[in-house]
Length: 115
Image (cartoon, rainbow, N blue to C red; front, top):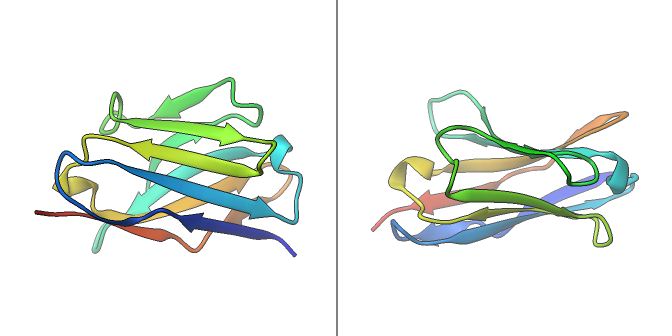
């Protein structure tokens, strides 16, 4: 059974940090690239960051460059999104997507940045 489960979201003050995790099971995680997306209320889902299957190539949306870091631990079947210097506009539901021979989505984890 394929599963992709995000965790690590929550409420944080502006300027704070969170680390999101994306735990995978049921497929060969090491052969899949990982993308993180987010969707704020009333807005379309947007790509935040991506990392290649073995982790050698990363890319970021301009609005998170220098603040977010994507990583992947194939030994643990887990992807991560380290988010620093969070802003209120980062508030959204964050989703993990695994892209390889198939495409899998997680259910999302809520991130709220507010004082």
